[in-house]
Length: 111
Length: 119
Image 1: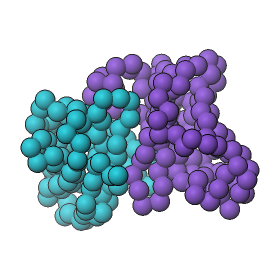
Image 2: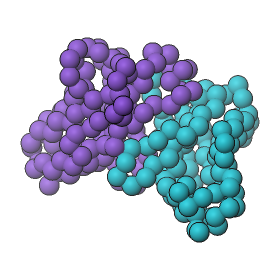
Image 3: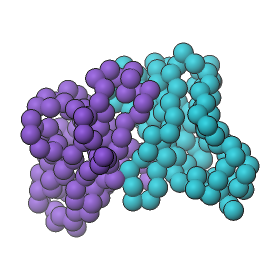
Image 4: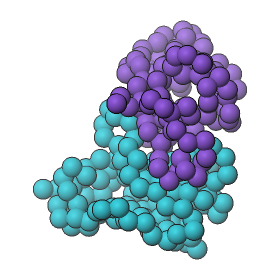
């Protein structure tokens, strides 16, 4: 039962433009949401998080938006850079110790 | 300031053998998490440990899998009598925070993973 879904396996964006990565979830009890970036043959690297009491969190070029009514999360990267090309995972947590990960979206930023 | 160290990076085992995966958390991190990524899937939680204690093993298969985090040395994920379905990337993450809220705000630090192939 996939509680966190990333329905777009891949996304291509021109350098300098905005990248928007989407994530949907089913569990209304999730209270924290995280985005991770992963390069091939490496572990995921933490990017940004948001708690359920907020609807936006910004860190440099990265902004995460949370729409609780729609159970939808998005990561905006602007401007996109070639070094942003990686697989992006969203993850969510309810009470307890584990995070539920989506299946990832492979972002390619075209120079 | 080494990150989370996992070894080996690649491990090949024949069906029925044992696999031992090691994870040394970041310095100062006393909370360790193991996740597994099957092909074409996201990471799935397996177990959460603190030094000498298993806190949450709700994601561990009931048989053949065990984990420990001794007072000295790395955390070990042990898979006995491996089968082809165990082939996956196994990631370890660590955190200095006991509080899930703090850990969630600052994220977990993942290692580069161990890719287990069962032949």
